[in-house]
Length: 183
Image 1 (cartoon, rainbow, N blue to C red):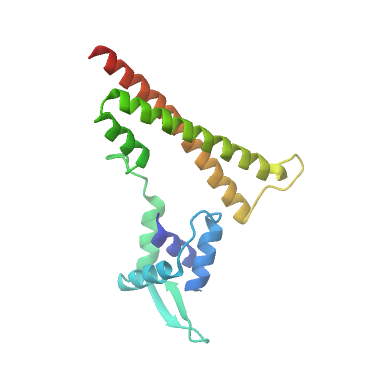
Image 2: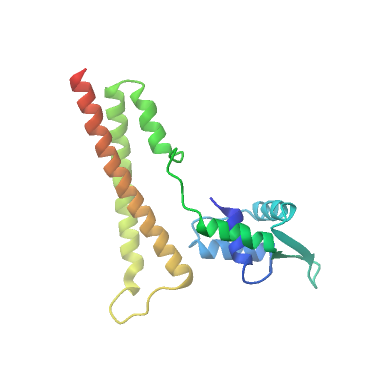
């Protein structure tokens, strides 16, 4: 999770207090990624150390953080960067399947079945969640904004990822079954 970049993005418009950054980060991410306030202040301390933010005491003696020119440059680099595919990011499902293969094809196929069953249940739950929260998506209604929009986008991303994971498990099953038949 790119907490430091998220905090920089929030500071781009105006200076903010640490707790304010925490709540705005959680709102911007649809409440899916709650932050510990200690994590926010630790990250802000590192950003200050690295010259990306500056801190001054506000009128109420609370720490007020501002993005620096170096911070704007760092944020600009983050906006422009694209995720790298090589090597793939660490993924628990992928690791679980790869390790299961080491214990033989029958074990791997059993793990695939358990994972597919669990993912299917999660996918159904998320689709129901999307349906129950999309009541406002009727013709003539105003589109979601703010935290509602963020929540819906996160739900959509989770659904698409679950669907992709299920397709990948199908590919794994085909390859493992083929390898088992030819060995």
